[in-house]
Amino acid sequence: MKLVAATVATLALSSSAMAEDRNRTFPRVAPPVVRETVPALADYTDEVLFGSVWARPDLAPRDRSLVTVSALVAGGHVRQMAGHFGRALDNGVKPTELTEIITHLAFYSGWPNAMSAVPVAKEVFETRGIGSEQLAAVGAAPLPLDAVSERERAASVEAAVGPVAPALASYTNGVLFDDLWRRPELAPRDRSLVTMSALIAAGQADQLAFHMDRGMANGLTRPEVAEVITHLAFYTGWPNAMSAVPVAKTVFENRGVAAEGSTPASN
Image 1 (cartoon, rainbow, N blue to C red):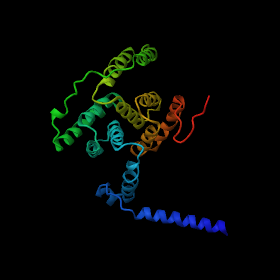
Image 2: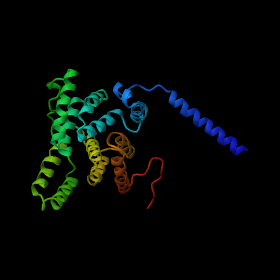
Image 3: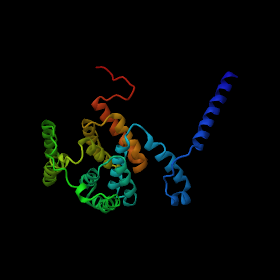
Image 4: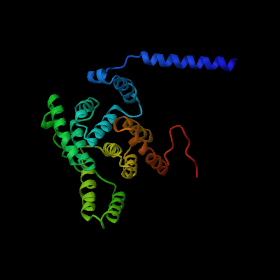
């Protein structure tokens, strides 16, 4: 009888919590057309995506905007860009950082996707009174790179790519890594965040391990990487997020990064 009573009490508490959650007032984020046409989608948008996911503390709002903007540009989702470009600016992303994300993703998601994002950014900037003088390049010296690791990476590219596509190997080492990744308009950690997001959005699991490891070397933590994957499940689909999970697991294990609250195994 005690077990039955305890079970009933637990169910009652659970039902009460669910009822309380249903009675909560969430900000209306979904456009009226969504609520009128696909009301269930509107509810998930308001209550789960923005009421829960965007409120999770494991990733700062600015980082969530970087991740979301990157996924939208990488996927060519032009109609969703304006709202999230504006949200990114509200969350602390600088106009020059937003333009640099578009530039960076030209290399990782293709010129057509980047070019499609340009007029959207222009419109958002004009609406907010952001002029060309605020979008000028920083003009600072290129960011330094770790000489040893870069020599190893360049040698690996030459060995793997050079014999098949020598021009691609040359552009990879000379333009992509020795120029683009050294531009000071976007911090290395943020470039890694942007690159990882674009790769997950495109389902490029083969390329993800290198950039996930590079991102952690650039300062991303295990909880942040895990939260990027979780966030992108909503913006790029569950299959792409699920495909990133085993990659992250391997990277965490190779780096000896323990799960939060666990004790690393001793040798």
